[in-house]
Image (cartoon, rainbow, N blue to C red):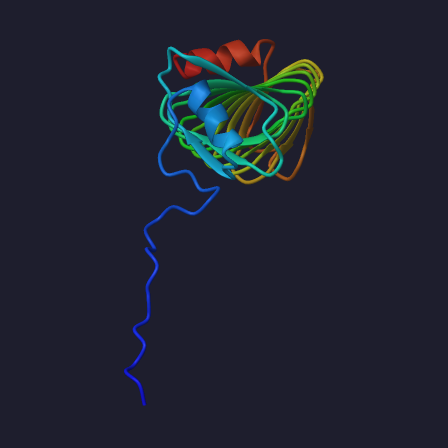
Length: 198
């Protein structure tokens, strides 16, 4: 019998193709990662540099963190930290922590933590935890947890849990929480912003 064959081992620390190794800091780095076939990209950019990310490809997971400021025109993105996102053209945003989101054009936002969402133009917003939502111009809001909502125009709000809603008289309110934590006001967005010292 011959000597035992020594097994060769692969270096398991080598990054897998498609997995980003560190956050990108600019739009140029972002496009370079996408061109290299990355399937997951984390962006942590200087807040002074606005990133117009366009339509996020369906097969790519993009997350912005820190104080990154970005706009997306379709696709989906996750936002955490104290970042800012403008979403349009049916985009989807999942917001955590203190992220600030402006949603337009039938965009959808899942707001968690203490994120802030301003919705207009048929945006759909599902808010929970301690999220704060300002909704107008045909928005649809589902408010759960300790969410605070200010709604006006022809917005629709479904109240669940302990959500608190300030609404103008034209807002359509539904849900089991509508009898306990609902206030009808003439200027609900202004009043909630003043209450929060914004």
